[in-house]
Image (cartoon, rainbow, N blue to C red; front, side, top):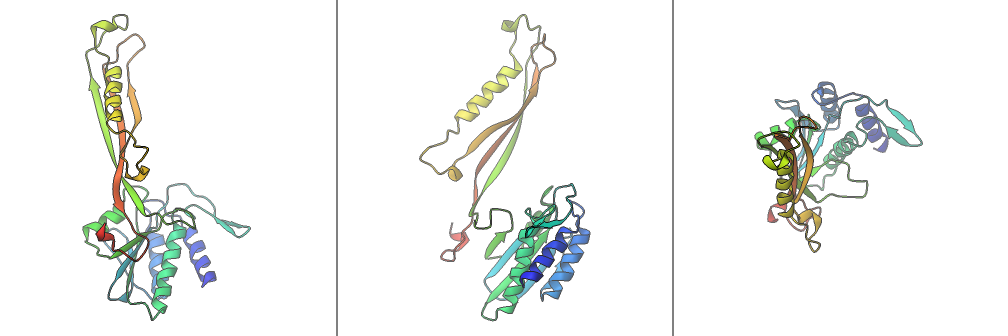
Length: 253
């Protein structure tokens, strides 16, 4: 089984699949999962869905087939595999495919496993959006993303990006007392927002709301008071909690 898993991974890594160009790797995965005993189909956007087992609980294993652009030649050195997507996230995807196949051979397992190989995770999240749109149902979900070989990530934060434009009247920089400065006003606004979300040293970082000024641009010339400034603010907040054990159901959170 180990050799089979390594072979699956190296074959996946040998197929270049940047976001939006997952057809070849999708066809390959569909064939491989069928050979491993899963019932396999494709949805409207190219996600490859495999099913094995029956009944409850239903466990969703979700990974993405695409990578960021840029080809990195496949090579194996000292027992390690190097290639685009080896870590993010064809390695986890191959592991989940093999895990699903093992479940199918375990007659003691009562339940159903869904494995979703999704498209465009690195770009638009189109694949996962389609799963949500189609109303996929599962009691538990595991997402294959690199968190270290000995780690399970049990929480995930949401993100809001806010774009702010500040406009003022303008004049010559030699008379700054006559006009409001859009750059200064934008920064004053940012300070107010930042101070509204202080980090509590007694609170776990995951449970805190953070705010970060990630971009600011404006100004016309060194002799002109800025009249228009654009800012991008990013806030992250507790959104989803996952549980890695079996004592409680995720919906209890």
